[in-house]
Image (tube, rainbow, N blue to C red; front, top):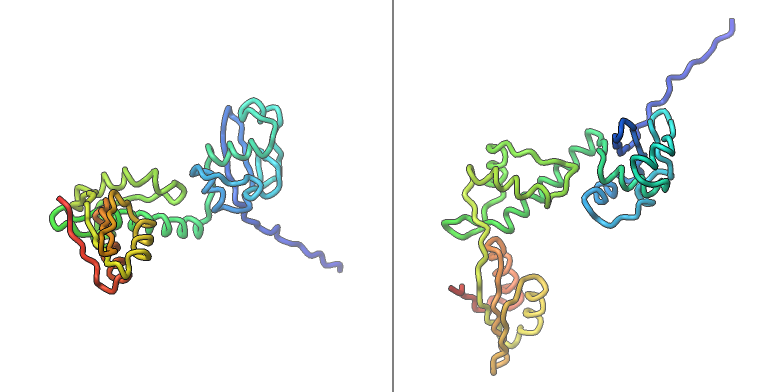
Length: 239
């Protein structure tokens, strides 16, 4: 008796971007999902670093190639790289469960960091603790889109958060006087990270710096200046 071996066809996961237009299906296989999402968000990314090959498919899983006439008609080009850009930017990028989870965690953390850095408690003018923001996001049932750029989601998320978490996106003006022994290094570091609106070098070698910062940056600024000057800096809030 002759034994015949049979093999199950290996299931290979493909990262795919898909666009449906004019009743036609256009798909491209992605080699780098993160760069594809960057391109979709508006970043300048070389399409050749994203695509796996240079083909456009009607069905990537069955390797059915696209109809070139349909591609020209609906995507406006015969160039596969240009077509791929259109598909990625305007279509849907399919994500695995692990990819969605990773991106969701990254985007959620970026949103938390943005709110904590830029918002403050309207009563105390102090930054809002991250844990309070997290709890408020759960209470407001905030949905973070793992495939969408954080900048595009912030306004909507803040709007949903405000009924359950009092926050104010205020700017404050501060004046710091840095002693001569630390003036050069400290001034350069502060100017590279915060908005300086005025500066004045004093006769004793000290530098007076006026800054316009978001309220959430207050603690970071104080910490930086105290570290750079060994606590010898003078800081006051300008009215």
